[in-house]
Length: 226
Ligand code: DX5
Ligand code: ZN
Image 1: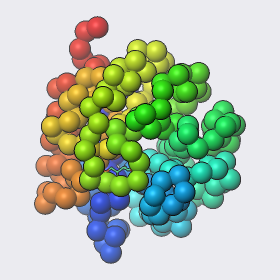
Image 2 (image 1 turned 135 degrees about the vertical axis):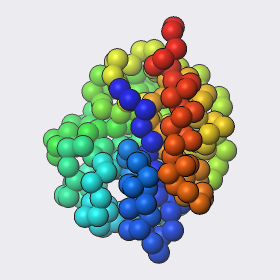
Image 3 (image 1 turned 180 degrees about the horizontal axis):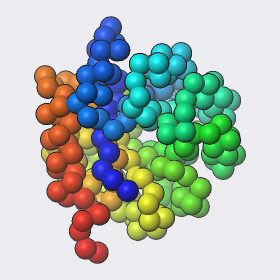
């Protein structure tokens, strides 16, 4: 398990998407985070399978696809046409009554499966799934928009989940992650960090990514004795 930075393209310049992705790739990012919103599960509409296919053609960086959509089971296949085994497809626990079914569907398509949990959803809803997933995504804002403030109270939940999770499970946080907030998320137990504003609003993406990585490493749960 390592520290990974995932660049959320929601704040990239959409007229320059290809260049923006190349720039974060050259800047050493570990994952490209793609926020898929349907206007139902969240009050915003963003990208879909067509954009994912396009991105797949221009980068070797694994994709971290965050589905914020209702009925994720119906759309799994449309997202897995061009993806590969290192790409992760994550759906929300609040969006389905059959999470294990969706996980199996994703894995059956040869991808890694992730489950996301909203700030106010109890950890018990995902506890039984931890053995079956490749990544847990803990939201530190209400999903829908970039640029919101990090919700500090979620760190308690991250800590609880890290304590019961299988040893090598990746735990991602998403929302309001910047050098000032990443330390708390890292010391609570997160090791994958999605960030939009704190990368794409900066002049120098390499410096921005390195600043996040450094703070996360210094404060990582992995290096602190418990
Ligand atoms: C919010 C998205 C996030 C968002 C993060 O619903 O899931 O990935 O882009 O944006 P920042 O880093 O600006 O909070
Ligand atoms: Zn996201």
